[in-house]
Image (tube, rainbow, N blue to C red; front, side, top):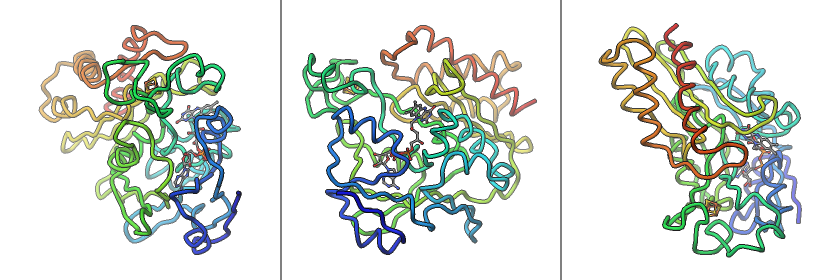
Amino acid sequence: MYKRPKTMEELLQASSLKTETILAGGTDLVPLIKNGVKNCSSLIDITQIPELKKIEKTDKGWFIGTAVTLSSLAENPDIRQAYPALSKAAGKTASPQIRSIGTIGGNILQDRRCMYFNQSAYWRSSLPLCFKTGGSVCHQAPASPVCRAIYYSDTAPALCIYGALAVFYENGCRQTLPVLDFIKHHTAENGTVRYKEILLEGFLLPFQEVPMKSAFEKVSIRNSIDFPVIHFAGTYLPAAKQSCLYAGAVSHYPVRLVKTEEAIASSSFAGLDALTEIAVQEIRSLSQLIKEPGISPKIKRESFKNIRFLFEELFG
Ligand SMILES: Cc1cc2nc3c(=O)[nH]c(=O)nc-3n(C[C@H](O)[C@H](O)[C@H](O)COP(=O)(O)OP(=O)(O)OC[C@H]3O[C@@H](n4cnc5c(N)ncnc54)[C@H](O)[C@@H]3O)c2cc1C
Ligand code: SF4
């Protein structure tokens, strides 16, 4: 069944999130349906609802509707001016074609990826079912009690550094959570993504009382389309030596680099090389690497050094 409500009221009336699946741009969901890893017999298309497609200034901050496309977000002059790292992250996601239909909500709620999961049913049929497909083992890390697939959303770390809140409905109640908590909340106990039950309305980006420097850097094999090998987002307030730093595509959540932030606050490092080394060690300690197509864990670890480009932007 396919429903396409035209207003928020219609959507809330139409949806039974226990049985129906939200369809936004479909760039993540449709390949998974085709590969037989998601069983979605009933879809609700949210792309025709004006309330979910707006970017507007409210008294609490900027609201970005879940169905705003990545290209509209990247091109929005207000967002580019106030939240440049988010604008850059949206503009660096996937390819122009995907950005023109892929949404910010779908980007945050995209499934974690793994080379044993993002495969056809025929390919997967040669292996026992893993956690993500209803089994009880992880082929990447057989001793792991949970799925170790990696979360690649490019916009997630950029939303996190600005303290963005996710606004969503669950069991009919409208709620808010910081984006990282929302991502964790959306993950089931065995580490797989709960793709039903939650209706995301959008994101609220608080105003910045004191303007901060902010930056986003992404490393990928082919810049024109690929998922990140790694990405970094950060803010820096020079007067207070206060920073907020995230790295992503290294674990099942974006990771916050608290020790590196502390080193910046206390100026306990001699130059950017030393700071880069502190950050590399911290990313190593927080990352949970798995086998990924096209890149070995050794090369992936080398990519951690690229955080230096983020530092050059923030402190340059
Ligand atoms: C070739 C290719 C390259 C890609 N490269 C990148 C990349 O570089 N970086 C990156 O971050 N991503 C990448 N992606 C992943 C993905 O396509 C994008 O993240 C895109 O933004 C997903 O948005 P969508 O609107 O198409 O989501 P959909 O596919 O429509 O939805 C994704 C998931 O979110 C759920 N969902 C969507 N909206 C809501 C809502 N409002 N409430 C509740 N649930 C919802 C859906 O049910 C589904 O489970 C790539 C995909 C492809 C195919
Ligand atoms: S990380 Fe493990 S459980 Fe998750 S999809 Fe891959 S093999 Fe399956």
